[in-house]
Amino acid sequence: MIRLMPKRYDFHIHSLLTEGELLPSEIAQRCTVLGYSGIAITDHVDASNVELVLGCLVPACRELDENFGLKVLAGVELTHVPPTLIGKMAGRARELGADVVVVHGETIVEPVQRGTNMAALKTAGVDILAHPGLITEEEAVMAAERGVFLELTSRRGHSLANGHVAKTARAAGAALLLNTDSHSPGDLITPDEAVNIAAGCGLTEGEVKAVLEKNPESLLERIP
Image (tube, rainbow, N blue to C red; front, side, top):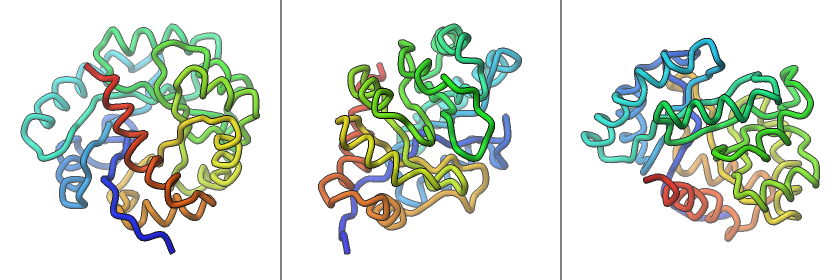
C-alpha cells in the first residue's frame, strides 16, 4: 500500500455555469474543507458561451482566490469543439482571462471527433488534455514535447482508460495530473482517495507523488 499525504490539486471542476451543481464559492468552500491546495473551475465552453462563462468566472475566481485558503483559478474545458477550431477557441479563452485551458479529449464513452487529441496537443495555450481515452504513443510523445499535461480522472466512464493513459504517458515521458471532472459535491475526492486512484493506475510511489504534487505545482508556475 502506498502511504502518502501529498497536497491535493484539481484542475478540472464544473460549476452551475454549465453542467455542475454548485456555485464557484461553494466549490471553493468544499475543497477547502477537504484540504485542497489549489483548484481550477473549468466549465464546458464552445463559441456559443465562452464569453459568458469567463465573464462570470474570471472575476469570481479572483475574489475567491483572495478570500479562501487555497488557489482558485478560472478556466474552461473546450468541449466537443471541432479539431480545426481548437486553436481559435483556446486563443479566445486566453484573451478573456482563462488561467487554465483544458480540452475535452477522445474519451471512450463519448463520440468525440477523431483528431481532437492531436489538435489539442499542437495548440499553443492548451494546458491539459482531459480523459484522452486510447491515446496513441505519437500523441503522448507530442504531449511530452509540448508540455501538455495528460489527465487521469476519477470520473465514472472516462476513468476506464486510466491504465492505458498512465502506461502510454510513462513510456513517452509525458506528465500526468489526476483530476475529478466534478459536476456535483459527491464527485470531489479526498487526498487519500486521490492516492489510491493514482496507485490503482499502476503508478509507483514516486510517480504518484509527481502526479499529485510535483506536476500540479509545475502547472501553477506557468500562471502569472
